[in-house]
Length: 293
Image 1 (cartoon, rainbow, N blue to C red):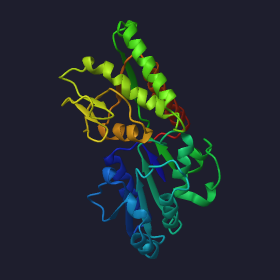
Image 2: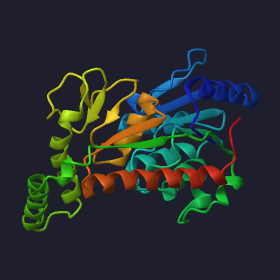
Image 3: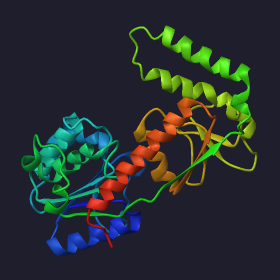
Image 4: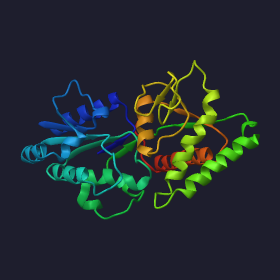
């Protein structure tokens, strides 16, 4: 069973209903620390996702898990490598019971191929070596609660980049990054440029609103980082390097509208376009899936 986009109460109900219907005698729940699933009315053993590969945990669970046990994987899609050691160890647990529930907020990290990692958890033998197909969504017990997210790009006053000195400064920085690239990953150029153009956004920051940025360079009390934020609304000054970090940000804040301050540079346009493309991939997935009601 795979359930996408459910909140905590809905997850609790899914597990409770499943336990009652299937005569489950033991429940083992795996989740990252920041997404621990709380089931107050259910007797279960909890493990951090990192425990899955631990020697002591691994062999102990292999001895105890049988077909009367339920395995629950909550927000365990953390890397895109389908052959990751943690996933491989989890498959050994899954081979010992037919009772498996997989919860994820989003169906993938970056694209639909990531969903195969979730399918491997519930039936590794069936999907081994196969690429994603939308047909798989109807072959298994998979329900999806779509996540609706609106992207609002807030353009800085148009006269900013009419300033020839600022244009020249931006072009100089871009050229410097290219000149010093060497054997480094070309992806570092947009990352560094995105960080660089943050300087042009500082005057737009209002003291009565909350913002989030990659780091603490703004030195303002109302600007948080992606390592330190809460469940509230934020305006985006810049996006994190990794898609997973932004996905986690959306999960925890619960935001349904992303407001992004665009400096008017091509690099900010690029990041906004990347998020739009990701949202489009989500919509395509949701359109093909069976909806949770």
